[in-house]
Image (cartoon, rainbow over all chains, first blue to last red; front, side, top):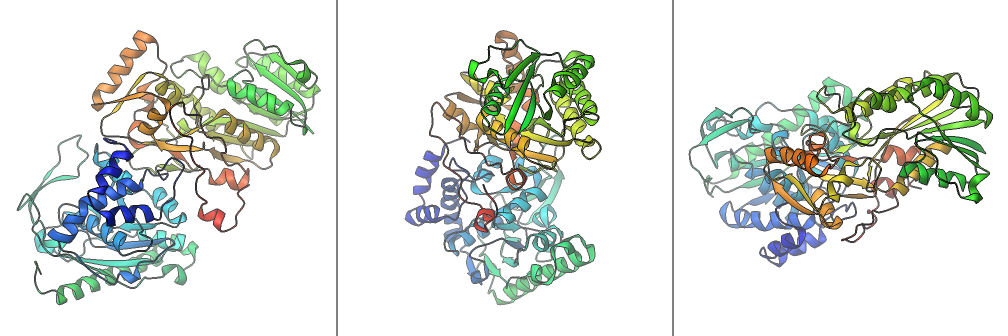
Length: 280
Length: 334
């Protein structure tokens, strides 16, 4: 890591007392040296908190609805729409969960593999709670009672053209399989605002050897100061309806994924109908 | 009361295991075998300990060992620790020591009159490390079968698979222990060799998680498997899980991040100049993506929990990990 936890702690103080307070009350499973088994460290979570807070409070002016649906403990999966060229929706959701849970919970973002190959970024993300999107990592976290943040649209979601905004792309099913197998409720999340933050004009194929999936060409170099509205829906208790063995049944998993997708789409539709404008 | 045959008995892990077994009242005799001459056994142990110098690369010698002294002592459990530790050693003879010796022993154990259990020490290095694979590694994790892998890795994978493929097919129960690296000299630990240098290079921007063990914990796991029943493959993690940079700091090694493509040439040069046995090529993926063994199966089936933190010369020892969900649910944690 470019800097040790002591410097992370000092940096996080720049975020104010609330940031430190959240870091000290964080629900966290220490593997012995202050890090969890995946490399998360509370002081780096606090640095992330301090860095994202100004964006959350002043730039994107995030409004949160239905955060009481986030389970206070136990395994759970947040499944939401993904968009905006840069993964700022993940950062806003990360902080929103941190601020609206008591004790603060880290929604562990499950990132695409290419993120792990990015120098510095991969390490800072790992310290902040991000894990690689392998089934084994997700399984281990759910078995430890952690909260996962999954964007089933993946890279096609974040790279969707402006004309497709708020239209969910191909919805992967792995999160439902995990939820059924490991007894985790799925909390649908609709993020309104991010889909307009950075319209993409074009995208180019990434150079050979680059870990990036593509090179985006956005309309602007910095995102528009759109207002984020994060809507949480009621948890979908798939594990109460299905037995863990049914996680292997493609029909069951497909039907469950369709339900989660419909729930997210409903939250988006509601959020869009209620908002008064892109910047309001 | 059982009698135990230990191969690789003069390695650091082997020596500690032999002493522990000799002191164990459940053990009648220990037959300690190595290709190097036996050190002088302490007199108080001599009556229950027999040491032999045997070259296990010769199948005739293996046969004479198992159907000679081992049969005479009524050896019931065979513990195999006799792999070559030097990561840069290569060639046919090394392969014989790493793989063929184990194969011969397993073949002979099938028709041996007294051996009923074989414990094979394997290594975490058998696992493939890649960005699209989990950081926390369970026993069903893919193995490193890359043809480009070094002989050190290929031999270990082959030995591991040789033992695994015989499970259920031979009379004896087979237990494979995939152990974390021990932070001790002479154990073949690449991480120990890496951190032993005053300056260690790592690829800039990456700081993977590592899990390290102590010889005491490895011995405890092997003893648990020696006295246990049933067969299978088990990960044996160590007590300490931490980022590579934190391990270096606690070990007192200065860590120098370098652009990725420069690290391998630097280590090659270091090897030529000072003969370091650390091989960056062997560890390149692990220096980027990390690997932490998940010991849940060993905990539940062998009762193994790492209890001995590494003695870090320049840092505080690890705190005991917080109770897991399993512990909270009242599952066996021994």
